[in-house]
Length: 52
Image 1 (tube, one colour):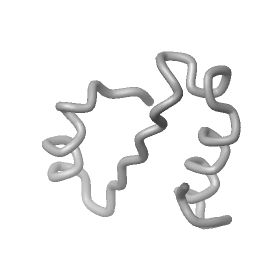
Image 2 (cartoon, rainbow, N blue to C red):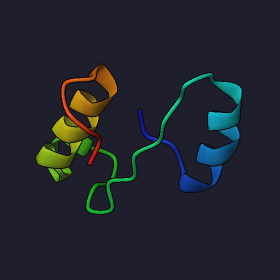
Image 3 (cartoon, rainbow, N blue to C red):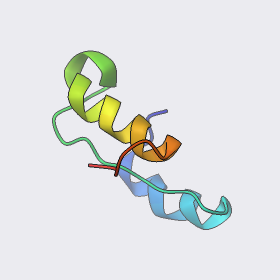
């Protein structure tokens, strides 16, 4: 899910164990704009490898 950067911190405070990943090269279509970053972030959340 994409969030405006200024909403990330308040959102993290509301969700236990939440983490944020910023993909600087991506816009609204993360999987198209930065496929490697998107995969790395997803794998990190699932515990398969560290978040980028």
